[in-house]
Image (cartoon, rainbow, N blue to C red; front, side, top):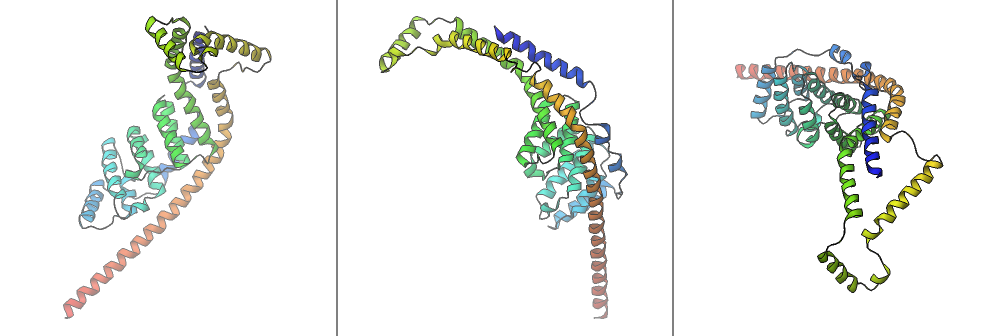
Length: 325
């Protein structure tokens, strides 16, 4: 039968793909390099102090600043602290300031999860975006996909692709290519079982003979159908379908209409051909975005400083007024 041949073709394409890809991931080292992100200016803070500040603020029914949660995530230094940050992300999402979770904070969160081996936490918060407010940009999606592809965790990568689809974030060609690659890798891991099931079904259809009870049931159904005399059962047509399929396939093959390479191999070739050019544009956009984030953060920090100074002056004025009274 053609099914075993098909199964061997699928398995071979999967092995060939793995051999072609080797240990190198699809994205280049320059793309996933975090040195520029790590070198950016960031404030050093104690997580214990920040946690105490946020807890006290929430207890007083006041909103926590987006800068505070950003500082907490930026200062993560261990896997355990990732878990702590998840708690405060949840708290922030359910606070009055939930709309002000900054894009750079989301990027930093994913970076920190990958840095400290908490990819599962990154995926969990992404899938539960309503509870955590994690809506990454394309570049952040790509480095998360790259991590799962490198680890051959295609089911997790497929979950990321699903979130990209739900967020409608297929604007960048690089994200489209990586998602397509993940899709076919994911299908390849499921295909062997599917083909085995298909072969079993075909064999049962072609070899099975109806028993007395089935024959009686078929007879009863035929009697109820007005056109039963002119129709054959689908079971009896199976050999005809199979013969017709082989005939059409042979004709397509003789006309050169059948691609010799598997779809998975073709997808990999397409991704490797198109992705390098996309990377150049993506990296340039990301570096520009880093500058914009830095400027925005500087403005917010200056505004925070001015508000604190103003509050301090007002408090001193009140104290003077109370003392003079």
